[in-house]
Length: 158
Image 1 (spheres, helix red, strand yellow):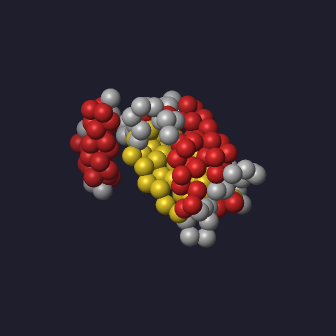
Image 2 (cartoon, one colour):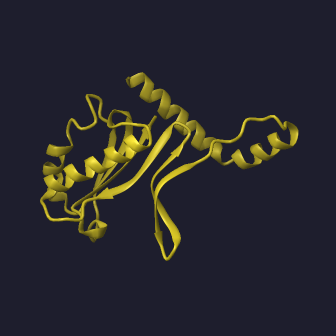
């Protein structure tokens, strides 16, 4: 499993590095070879709009990667309740996209208050299987939008 994650991360970084020249290379391939394979198409889910203009997607798929937008919990409760609900929302998005919590490669955690770090960890641990993803955790100056005590986003593979 660890070897598979490393392989996927290597491909991710290789594809990100190649994105800069992708447009030029794609045009050149189209001009020289009309039977070239079509480029991967981005799929978006749960698009949020503002004034009838798309603002952001709940999740996006490209190739075998899934990017899930930040999820928060905007109701009453302590950090443990908020963390549990946020993780449930992440899992729902992952399942819709054909992935799972065990396939998450990276999680970003944004806390309203760094003092909630311990309580968040108590609920977070074990939710991603025996081989947890890499994680970044920060306390957000001014708080998490929407009065959530925690917000999380993630990147996973299919």
